[in-house]
Length: 288
View (cartoon, rainbow, N blue to C red):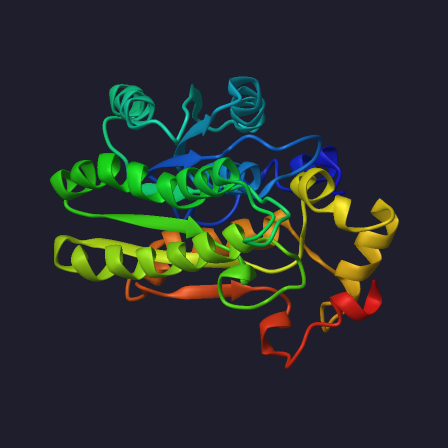
């Protein structure tokens, strides 16, 4: 996994450089805590947003993980708060957003990075697991949009970034039926938000990660392999360039979509997968 200290130090002086792309904006990142040591996609996005000038609300069900991310931002001279929230509960999302509005006054960027995988096809999948997948993977997009979009409309616009998965558009070799289904739904939900609110100054785009080396895969994916080493080798082999991406590959794609440089881009589901979605078939299963 990526070493946190290396990534933290690599851009600690970024604020002394060129124009900051999110200066004057506020970002709320749901799922901003990492799912273990190292850099998760949400954690990296929160830090990158802050490095580009945004005030960042780091929201996570695990408030200690949110505080860790906010602490990194503060140590680099940025502005961040940590907020606890359960995205499966509308009241919890409402309370979290209220805290952010009270602290920062507005929300310019809504970033959704919450998700869960259950290794099971429709036959093996329990009703509880299926419902949890809907509530977390898709329900988080619904509840956060429901609460945040009215604030964006009042402010004259904003940007929604949803983190989906290559599993939303391709079979990737893992037997997680509910994950395929809900991530596909996230893609089209993003398009629906983009089209419905375009005239109100709101853009919505989706980032589709491919094989990314984050703490989550070691907890939720590694059971499909004989060892962690086998998993890493197989996932690297699935990529045309021979290696997985990292959380900052996803974060910088999200940063672009959140910035004014992407002001004419909306309703897009952008693969960030090292070209994996361009291949006829993945070599992941062959390498296992």
